[in-house]
Length: 237
Image (tube, rainbow, N blue to C red; front, side, top):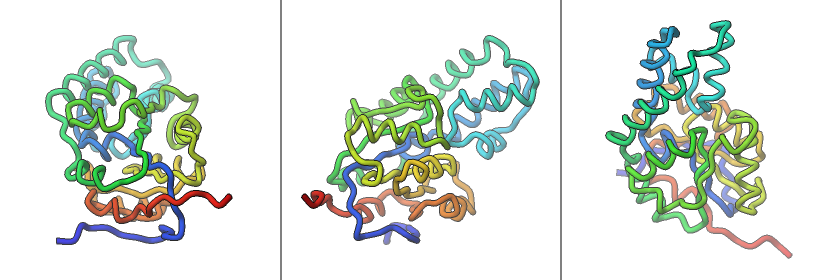
């Protein structure tokens, strides 16, 4: 069976020097777990919300930005214990149950240019999920978090920071993202984005939303990815 995929504007005349992967929902199938825990802890701390509402509002965004939105609505800070409780509950849930995205190892085996991770999650969360999924060694030490920049996705800061650290021009970077905020950030950084809808959190219509946000292509199966990445060629001298 041919892996599913949709293509709109991906340029096969363009070559890339780096593939930047989001983590949650792209490398590891963690978003359903994260949304459930986030909703449960918020509800216990006086902000009733469902896992689906968390998915719709905060997918691809940092916990820091989510907190700011919620505190503006509440008109007060979240309780002092909230962040630690959410983090501890989330790490425990992920450490016991998160899995790799199907076929991600196959996709990585077929990519011949450097790869790295750029996630809205904190480093301890990234480490927990990638380690359980058996992927940490494939990316370390090239793993970057929104905690390293002033603004998280949908701002371009994280992707521009990654390009600088990896010494690759933004225009030669290809980003794999499952969220509108991630695709928006990639495009704002001057990078090409491929949308991914193969996570268990994805819904009908997500592919169209990612394309509308600026993704050049949307795939639902990681086995489709290597064929979309042209071989690297040197820049003309």
